[in-house]
Length: 216
Image 1 (cartoon, rainbow, N blue to C red):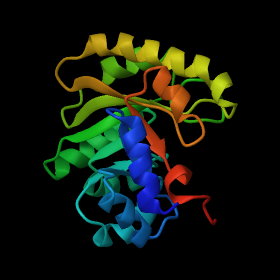
Image 2: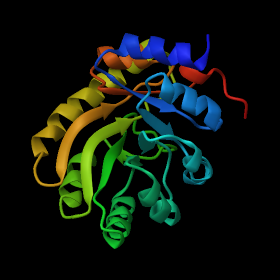
Image 3: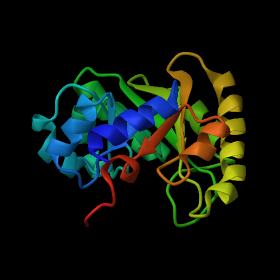
């Protein structure tokens, strides 16, 4: 199937669940084919890679979904509508500072390390509530959702992690006020998005399911 056919098929399958078309390593012609087919949100993993592509991509909602280093925050704030991968208070504070400089309120998701894996980025499951309290003080950051990447296991083995993430999402929404307006739960990728949706995802991030296997 073509990129256009894959995109349309997945959008039809998802219904009201939002699709992030993951464009890491994908050339702009194929990205644009996905957008033309109805993908309204694209997700990039690296700031520099997207910086090299952005002028060739038509209007759409642009999300950063990969780890963000503090030295890349300035450009990320300039390029992206949403930064999904806010994984520490330090990064949130840097985003706030850089957004203030250009008169922007940056929409972000907070990344939760749902498996509490030491090698992965994100707030621990026991840290996210305090993180939200701390981020309430930042005037140029608007928290719109939560995001997670479960351990690398089979879809069914990932189900408990997605279920726990949905419980955390529901609990954290109770803090909604001011710059905290948690409405989106971004979880699930090409291999496990169906299980993620069953467990409450409002947004999934699909790359190979649209573009095929990546050529690194």
